[in-house]
Length: 159
Image 1: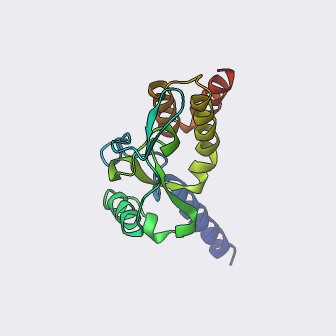
Image 2: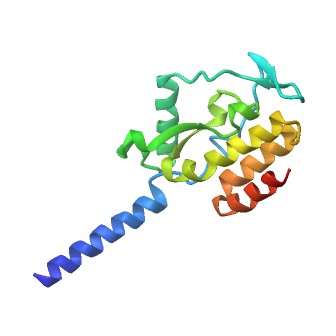
């Protein structure tokens, strides 16, 4: 009986570790989601007058993004859909595009880390304290190196 309980505990632990390490991407895949800027502007924003695209991602586009990521080894479609959003690698507020090259399935454990930084970066762009080029670099760095988000956020706050 004890061995059965111990074995069950090991199986649960291993599946939890597997879930945390490989079922979903921690950041965008560089080949599938290199990032893309808005090319056909709906409007222009900020003192820098960057191109802004309105949010326009269909359900079928979202499904295709999940499928592409699962084809390279993730298992996003076997997880709860509510645990994900289709993220714009370069956020729309920073001039990002709705194209597939800018979209990826972002797990809630990741967007809880990055969303606040995105809002802050765009706030600084609106205030004219941060140019698009640097904003995009900071966001890309953060989404590819989640452990650096606190330091990046501290820097952006200082602007």
